[in-house]
Image (cartoon, rainbow, N blue to C red; front, side, top):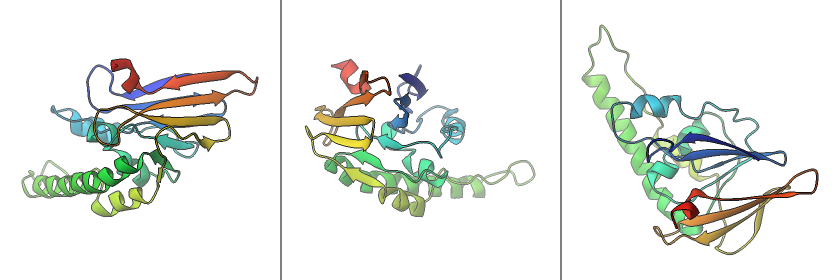
Length: 191
């Protein structure tokens, strides 16, 4: 099992982990970097991975530092499912469209207040339409119910008690050799 931490390392925002095991490639969370002068550039550079061979996404909860780049992931070409709890899906409808609205307003403000001779008008990280498109890829699962997002992977959401709908994810991967590798989401590390 190979884990690549794409965010949330050395800081508390931008949670995103690429898991590769048993022929499956998936993300756990897809969070936005927040705060500081570097956040805009980090969010622009994030998700520089092979999206064509990404099988699915697992989401622990709706906080933007865990979910905020999902619309950008989809806008960059990811077409697969995003697995989460039903309550998290409900929260994302509000949070991601609100985040997109803020992205559009900030890009508009920057365009109006830039030095036209030296700066190019920045585009938003994603738009309202891209956020709505992302929401169509959500697939819900109940707590304590096993689901298989890939033939070699079984998952189960457990209540994390963090915010409504938050989950600890128990993911188990069956390798070609018949061995099993287990992985639990970072939410369990704090408990």
